Length: 73
Image (cartoon, rainbow, N blue to C red):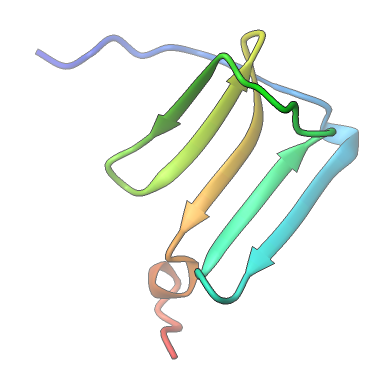
């Protein structure tokens, strides 16, 4: 039996920020100013990280971005 699915809101869509770290091949997507502390951090089996504060996703981190896109250097 699989774990129950939870739903979250996305925080501040008018303040989206994208940062790519070439050294780690990681894309960080932030919604508003990222809080110093979050209530929950989730890392999926697909190596995507979510940071949750007050029931809202405040950031998403996608690891191994170029590999996922088939653009490995």
